[in-house]
Length: 452
Image (cartoon, rainbow, N blue to C red; front, side):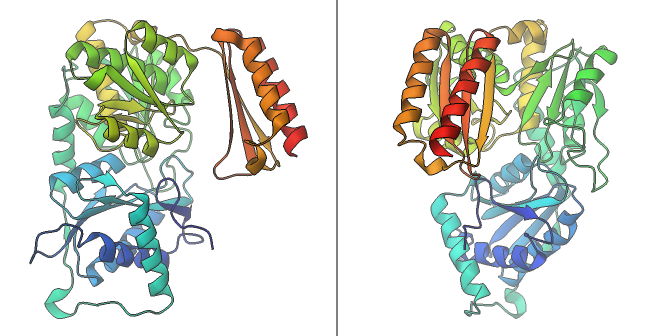
């Protein structure tokens, strides 16, 4: 049987792959693993539980809360809040762990269970493995220590979590947003109340779109994976910029005053320069993944900033940030981590800090984003090939070497097997779009021939 935990918790189609029984079992298993890890003697374990507004989150939340309380864990139920809010509250309230029910940017039928360790940090692989092992032990009927009487957990609705989190976001901003008009696209998701409230408290004139969740419309035509609505709304409302988060608001993309896209690389570049100028960019370093645009790498060099690159995935970015003591990292997809203020990617915080840079410099976002030039980037997914042989194929290696020779210093090749699908990703960057397409297409043909 495959591993339950993926790169970001346990996900699947709600009530098919991810059932109420599984959610209950996972919460009981997590209680046994996480509740006793460094807690205060004599104090009952405490967990923070939140969710995004998917309809399935209602019954999955009930299952998780029931599992935790049955395992002797007190529960603070914070309701619909972003993933980074649950992480923040887990830390600020001194909880033993947190649970978020969300499938992030996935379509509505999906859902997921994500756990945070004490302090609001993502779980290490070792802890996920222990939770999974306990889950299967319980599923097999092995007994576990069930509390009775006064030993069972108590459940409390914690409505103060909303204000506590919003106050935190506004409190860490380096500059107020007075005078800015901002369009917020909340993806009909978990930040539908949080993001507009935070921007308004920070002084912005706020226009909201995609902020009417009904349990069924999350990520449907709105949010960071569907930027068309934001592109149109920003110039239509005469706004200075627009911010789009995804369903659980752990990522952020933007649009400048003309409606043009501002991706995660550009956001990282703008914030990197801003934090350098403010003296908060530790070690003068930004952490990004190998999928970052070459234009971002060149921009960091021009600005005198160091760049540390990791494998694709925000968890790898976070690991490198912690290892090196760095304060800023992220991905092209909009996962941006400002480690002084958040333990995970936070789309609302990222958008606030980007807007704060516009307000502080009194320069349009389009001008600030020109700190880097996005080089043409072509990505081809070569399907139905043996991805396991990609690293060992002499034919593929020779083709990559030839492509790199053709591109020289003005381009880049990245060829890597997918971690979840039977395909190999071929990514080529070049100063010229036609050259990037031609080189990528040629490499894709070689991969198909050699590994098919």
